[in-house]
Length: 359
Ligand code: ATP
Image (cartoon, rainbow, N blue to C red; front, side, top):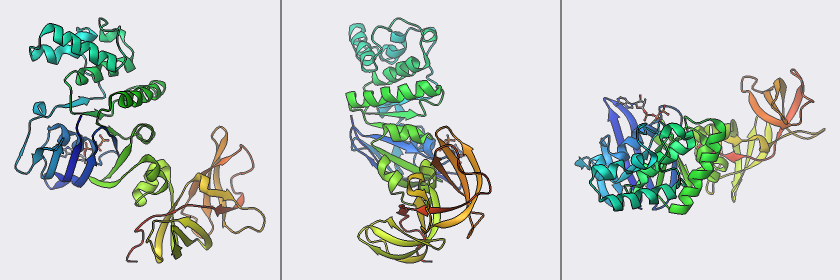
């Protein structure tokens, strides 16, 4: 297996930058998810790595070898990159073994050797015993594993997954997530996994690259993305974080004293972050409490309270800024009717680095 390095990669269509100045170093054996909203450039990035598109600027290296830069591009078939698509594209008239071994047949690999490689690939995806079945007689998850075996048989240096679970139902997605995780652990394959499903990315990836309008917004572990988002886009995109305006009064060793709608609270911050007027903080449901009698907090009104099974989803309009609705979950199933007044207390949160700089 090999690592992958993107250095200042840009891809321009006409005068539109689909991918803009992206640098990512994927370690040998790492599982990297590329996550972002529709149109942010995920597929373009995958096509650049696979070799279906050429970079407009920058450089791509696989296992240290330059495969694409302004000077030229190694064709897809010479990159040893396997791709698993969301529509498995299996040949219906061929058995599982024939599907998996097709590329070996085309390459005229000796039959015994080919059979050995096919068996090995099927074992890697836990499909031993189904070699003689046809795709029509497999479940969606099994078909996706055949597609994975078909790409592994060519001994790729890295494997790209393009939204591989998008066509599967919710239950199957969860079990395939477990299978992909187990497969990665077992084989140590370097994986780049494109998805717009953040729970999938969180569950599977060592690190996640969040893309926004063609740019890399943040590259971090799932935990870091959740607890220390680098900017407002990542904060609101990941787990629907609540972004609130804040004035930073002081900072000291990883904590910031901030004022949010007249309510003073202490939140976590990046070392070196400093006081400023127009910053933002990110808070999540666990960072919020309903203030008790005499406790400080943000006064406001419940606009809507919807029962979500075990918790209420409350839309809260702060009196100081009623258009900025704060939505959060509150454990329990009663107690807050539409129009009820309450005081919301922020007990922790994260000062978004760089927010309000220069203000
Ligand atoms: P989705 O999640 O919807 O698949 P994505 O993040 O994969 O989106 P891309 O398919 O990479 O996004 O597209 C990024 C942007 O580049 C989009 O605005 C798209 O319209 C544009 N784009 C992609 N391919 C081309 C092309 N061949 N010519 C012109 N524009 C393109």
